Length: 109
Length: 114
Picture (cartoon, rainbow over the protein chains, first blue to last red):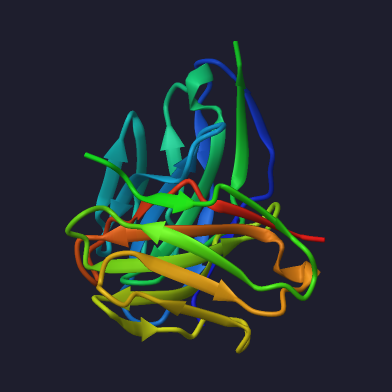
């Protein structure tokens, strides 16, 4: 079946540091790929998505590219802010979603 | 507009009891999804509805779990003979239609089985 593997966390960075959070997947068919974010005390919300190979999703300075050859969808941001502290989930699917375990990001001033 | 709402926000029950968890999707969304999230894990799919019918219930762990959506809007997840292992946050999400990419999540119901 489908699965998503995220790098182990937590991750702690200083403000303005570069961020990469790795995500790889196994899937049958052609699923869409997503990054969801959960800020402290809030519900899950969609951060960005990509629907087919080589698509790049972007939002709030975050980017991720759907790489079919490496089955990856790594999340990047050039300069993180304290307000980016949250739990990040990689997910795939077309209807029902399969999620990774999530990774906690803490950004210190 | 209003987002997905779930009630109750917290539910504490005793082992063996029956519980119902309610989800109100965003108005006009025809697809509704239930997920379960255990501590330190990502959400796991349980069931989804397209309209009134369950399109895929392959994630329900056993026959103690059942969900309905009789009028194609509000959905209720029902758990019979609860067990301690059922303790988790139960999340509901809705989307405009089946296969439409963005699912909007509710705040969840935290279920604790003592």
